[in-house]
Image (cartoon, rainbow, N blue to C red; front, side):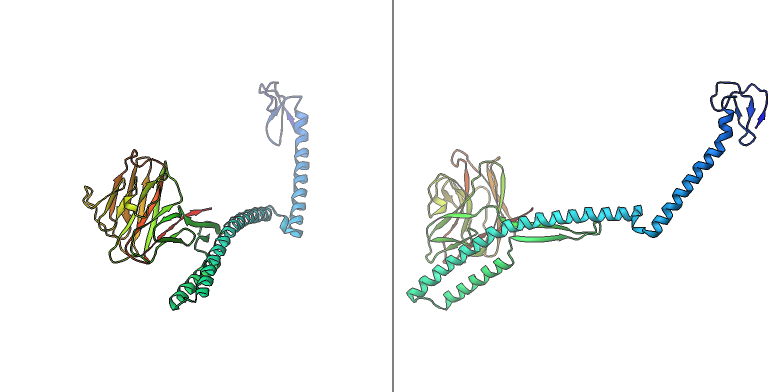
Length: 344
């Protein structure tokens, strides 16, 4: 340290006049702070030695226990979090599938019991033929397949290049509605998903289980069997109207049929102002769109993309509405209501 007489202020307090200049840092200090400056190199050296020793200890620790390094700790934390997420996803998926499987197995059991009753009855009457045996075998194989690998339940694994662990999703496939009531020579099968015309060529009708008073709904049907006359009816009816075998003469009924037929509040006609021409045939998928809010229904053939719309007079067809389908021409004509898909 050297002393000097100058008019500069102390570099530390910037208040008092500086009388001393440090020979090391070449800064000026007052009388109060010159001693602190004199001690500061020693203090900084002590601090440096402390930090040096601590770093040396840390190096030795990581050499002996490299798994304690912070980077390894980050990986361990990610592992724990990932395992927890995977376990939670697995638990959720398992619970959802178990709930659905329980109901599914009960339905299979009921279908199998119905089949057993039919087989026993025909065996007792001694009227079984090769045709019956073939039908029973097909039914049995379908039930077995549906039990082991149900089409209504799917496990989907989302593989992508962004996430390391693929996401597991349970997909439930089930109809939006089911067939519930019948009139005429027709029966319902496959837990409400299939309507089958009986042995006589006469009108028969089926109603859905659901009730619709507001909102929009989209239903898809597959024509699995259809006579060469190509007649089937797709439409709606007010819930409170009694069932009739002739769907197109049911009061409040609205819909479209084969052979260019239109039904307006239970009145059937083939001359129309919407240029409707029926193009339905076997294996076609028919979409019925119901819009309660705007009081319309629309029928679309997915094969030909033809689409026709009917306005519904709410005074003649009051809410709630139900699905109304009809068949008439041939034994064995059948229509299936197709499932929709949603993700759990």
